[in-house]
Length: 193
Image 1 (tube, rainbow, N blue to C red):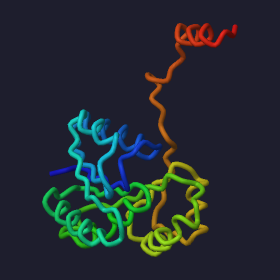
Image 2 (image 1 turned 120 degrees about the vertical axis):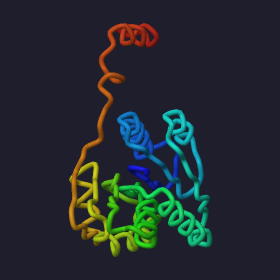
Image 3 (image 1 turned 135 degrees about the horizontal axis):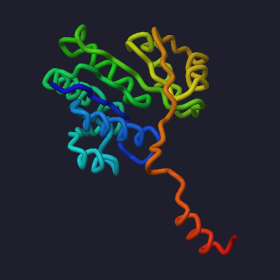
């Protein structure tokens, strides 16, 4: 049985995608089986996930016309994998996660979480999906945001989650620690003291 089925809008290069790779690979390393679903297609992050032994499924949804078929495939995948938790990432990922969670059997024994990763949104570009998600925002057991400003922004737009948790973005302190040799090298390259 899969521990967590992550559903994300896409696997391009961005902040949410980076956090997903870090979280899923960390949980996978701890023995919690992860599966990632990209609503759109694969992307650069799919290879990284695969390198950590995490299966990736791309639904290939490119337009509203592809939506019902993608939702059907996701619902079947949830039924087959029986995850303990379905975790939505980004607006389309949240929407697909919520709908498939409701349609797949066994939802009473499965959690639904959403992820909010923005504190300001292009209202024109995302108006439709924001309205849908605001209507469904009470469905998830927990909505996780990476900032209090993000929560406030979405509440102003009609989100009414039952429970909210703010978990700030993590930083890999081993990877991003001070390095005196690297600092000296860059300073030499730039010609500064």
